[in-house]
Length: 365
Ligand code: NAD
Image 1: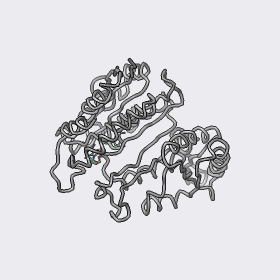
Image 2: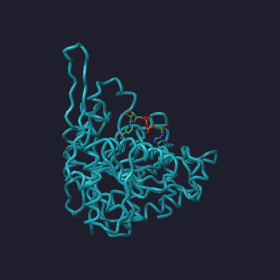
Image 3: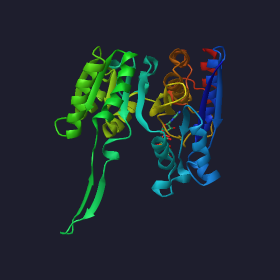
Image 4: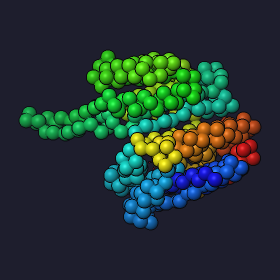
């Protein structure tokens, strides 16, 4: 019997609602596979502030440290918005978790089934078969983490600066994630940079060219400037298979990809760590791309698919169970194709609640 040990951090708002049913889907998926789930639940975000005085209590960190992966819900909400920025649930929980577990790679599937093309702001004729790409974003380097300064100048003016810094090794390790992803897909990588202006991008482009040629010559590599990539994402997202880019460009492009793909309720994500777990796979944090949806929290109507698909990513990346992940992904797709819809993806059709949506997926497993 194989045991999967992971931490469950449901968080706030719709987090606990979608987490509960995602765990039911996971239990069903592993039922006949000789796999045992060993998970421990802990407070994070606003609920942790209320219960324990901190968005990421030591006890929660300990639960995560004892695990091989973290299945995360989402954190934050109006109740905690008046706290100082550094104490806000998202910043005080997610950033330290990224740092503690050296989560250097963010991987977001941009997936829109063709049955849901109405959810996209793009015209359906531009995406007749839906959308399918992956965005791989470097998460611990670049301008967000480089030296920054704000200083008063002698002439009375004020000057602020942020510095973008990348080492070749940091670029190579994110390229490894993109290569691994491309190998399971169409084998195409588009590396996004601003090499006409930035030194870091010149290094990025050179490293991508040399590293991929040496390590995975079968991959079809292209390069694109980030301003063009933003336009192309809105024009024809399916021209991309795997996008790989630095932290800030990836922050913006992956959010654009999210809106182009329609409902946040369908979008999962994985943040992979530098260190391997006891299964020999990267430790990772898996979470929906959306937030706590305070407007619908507590009503049992949130779409659980993003949380369920995040659990599937956990099986694939942190436990090496790709076929089991695919089984869950196919069940979600089939449930949607068969017309099961929560309100966010109903478009005038009858909608069902969180629990019923999960049941429709469980039936198809
Ligand atoms: P949001 O993603 O929570 O909601 C935006 C819209 O999408 C809302 O209309 C919401 O109902 C809808 N939506 C999101 N997920 C859905 C789902 N699963 N099913 C159906 N509809 C869904 O973004 P927001 O309103 O900007 O933020 C709300 C709170 O969430 C804020 O406190 C914010 O800080 C927090 N947040 C947390 C995370 C995180 O934990 N990683 C990410 C983003 C926002």
